[in-house]
Image 1 (cartoon, rainbow, N blue to C red):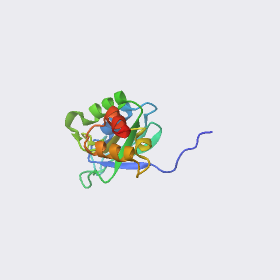
Image 2: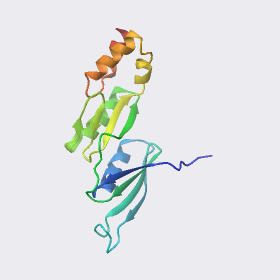
Image 3: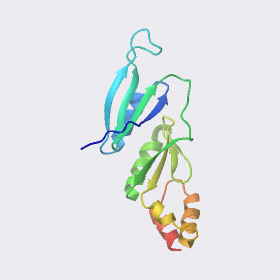
Image 4: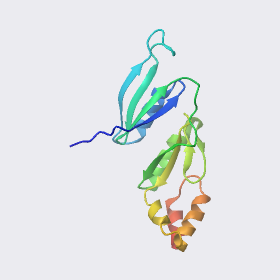
Length: 160
């Protein structure tokens, strides 16, 4: 039996939320546009523009609201994508930083729409567990020097 969560994340965009949602669902398996409602004549935005695009990324529900320029996305909230391979990290990093996206530190980036992402290896938590462990400290130090995560370098740092 499938349980649908009553909780989801709504992302505020000026006028390109539908485009962003289409881009995000193209990057991840098990992702889809669920529905699109549009502004009508006399609304606060141009008629026909998507008002609310509901979508799922790898089964997690989101909504993209085209609400105008009143609010901006910020680094205060980010989407975390855990990756099982360096190839997956490389693919997502390239796609999300393309066309005006910006790299940051420690696996963080901002895509061309202004949404912040953390592109991290799924085994990072295991490498960093045990705060007093020298391997965890070495892993953390290596992580702090990276932009895009290099799994092999993190594993080497964990070994000492």
